[in-house]
Length: 276
Image 1 (cartoon, rainbow, N blue to C red):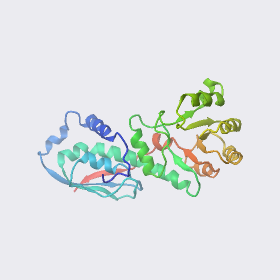
Image 2: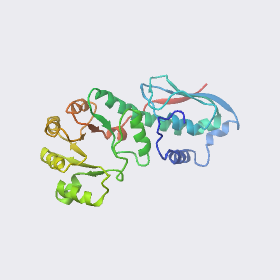
Image 3: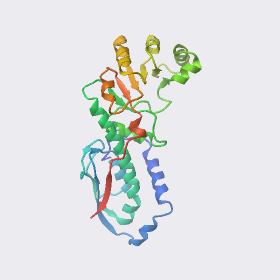
Image 4: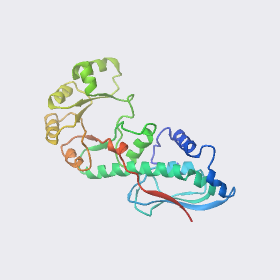
């Protein structure tokens, strides 16, 4: 479908249905001031620079074969860039307007913030990845928006990769105990990542040949030492990552940098719908 960056995220139709029901309920009261069947020419455009996401979703909500889709998710846009335009039935346009813009503005905000992190780390081998710190119910769309911004998805949930964190280690007694128990219980095809807070833990995780070693809230110098001491290990940096710190973290040589802010704190990209 036009507007989407393939592959499309999963599960979006039910999210759209729920969002429309939440806003429209039993019907748009204000729409009574328009005659049934009245049409209008409209356009949706960006009001600031960024990366757009949600165009395909917006077009699906508007449900008109006559509209023109003028952008694709992942496109860089500037203020005044048209995204969608064409004729619509007035009542339908107004009933869907806020839902369309809510999705567009939020997802474009996620994509735009992701792209800023990606551009800040350009020239290094580090890839910007997301986390599970997502808005409940919107994870598939938010992670899709991260991809549109040039980022990479981490695990979708607890079911597609194993991550041993501090509480797992405390409950099991050690990293070795946790990894051993996990390998006895899950498929050999599932990847295992271990969260480490110091170089001794890094050494223990590396000795166990885990798939990814997370350097959690480590100083930059310690991250660099970990990468240099264990050149064959795959490292993910996490914690304390923002646009001011991510460049130095990327320079340590880590392979991945996870950023919770991509999905839990991205500011919306201003976008509006206007009639003409």
